[in-house]
Structure formats: C-alpha cells, structure tokens
Image (cartoon, rainbow, N blue to C red):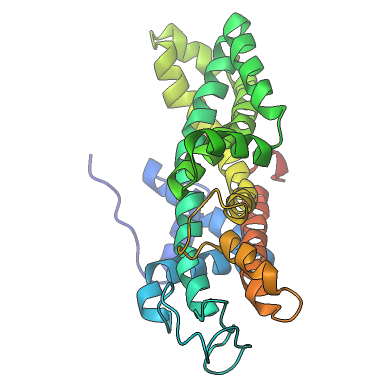
Length: 309
C-alpha cells in the first residue's frame, strides 16, 4: 500500500486540518499542527520558548558570541570590578573577568544540568510510577513508600546530603539533583496509570497475550508522557535553582568554571559597592527560570487532556 502524498502550497493547511484523515501519518501530523497552533496563540508561552531557544543558541555558539575569555581576566590593576560600560556590558568581577562572557559560557553548564537531570530523572520516575500503578498491591506499597521517603525532605537539603557524600563537582551535583527529582514524576505517572490500567483497550491487549512489560511500555507509558513532560518543564526552574544553590555553597561547579550560582557567591563580597557582580548572574537565573515556567504553562494548556475543551 503506497502512502498518500503530502500536498504542497495552499492546500497543505487544509490537508493538516481535515476532520477526515486518510492515513495514520496524516492524523499524527494534523494533531501536531493543531497543538502548535494552540501553543502559538499563547504569547507568554512563546516568550518562554524564545528565551529557552536563545539559551540553547548561546550555549552552542558561546565561543563565537562571548567577547572575552570566561576564565582569563584582564589587568587586575586597571580592569578589576569595572561597572557596566560599552566595553564590558555587564562589568567585570573581582578577577577582572568579563561578566557577560562568563554568563554566556555559564549557559552551557545550565543547559547541561537541566538536560542530564531530565534524561536521568524522567525515566526513573516513569518506571517507578507506571510499575507501581499497574501492579498495585505490595509492589505499589513498597515503591510509593520509597518515593515518600524522598519527598519527605526538601530537594535542596537532600541534594546537599548526596553531594556531601559524593564530593563537590558538577558531575556529582547532576547526579544528586537527578536522584532528588524523580519522586514527583513517579507520583504523577502512578496517578495516570491508575486511570489507564482498567480501560477496555488494556484488557483487550491483555487478552491478546501481551505481557505486562509490553503493556506498560507500549500503552501505559505513552499515555503518561504528556503529563510528565509538562511536569518536567515546570520543574526546570527548580532544577536550575537547586544547581545554583549547590554552586553558591561551593558544592557544584568548581572555580574557575563560569557557573551562575558560583558567580553570585563570588560577588556577594561586593554586593554593596559593586552590585553588578552578583546581580547579573542572578538576573540570568531569574530570566531562564521564568522562561521555563512560562513554557511549562503553555505546554500544560495544549497537552493536558483535562484542560482541553
């Protein structure tokens, strides 16, 4: 059977928005296009998406965009703690390093942290939540009590405990944040699974001989993904703040790496007279955290089936 050709020109929009798709591919593309149209109508979500894309752009092209080296400073006698100017847009720090360049390079560390934490914590939370919700009984009890233990402690305090055990460093900070980030995803996935496991199509799949692992992977996990993606996006701000907190305390990225939390810690000595040293990385953390919150709110509006009219 040959696939239907995709139309070009003015008919492509009608082809995507048709109420009677002729193939599974057309139905999927049409649903994705409707989701994008709904998301595009939310200007706050688009603002958040724009800031996140700008963060990714800065992280990729930091070597080209940054005007100065992020770790090598200038003359300590004449270029130390300079205020914002045309030569140094965000001023310089106590080591005569350009703050703007360090913030641009710090975008790489921020993006690295949020990406790796999401890639580590999300599968763990999905696995724990779907298995607990699908099997129930003693499996559910054991897994949820373990989850409750992690949820009983504030995330930053628990991350501090793990970093103290693993040792300071950006790699250990990522592991510690990931370990403390998966419980909310497990709770959410379990709640979604409890509403899915008794559906007729799950019973029909089970009667056809599908095993539990296949049902969870092929049918339960995909239906939980939209809610988990929304929660992960909304949690990005918390991940950034936790990473910055660890960096501020000297347990995250180590000097001279341009990590935003460590930059704030370095600038607190000059907060009265040279306010820009700590304020500029703080504004970067605030802007990126706000962007992820706006993006998460927009994704919730278009992906959450409960919010659809």
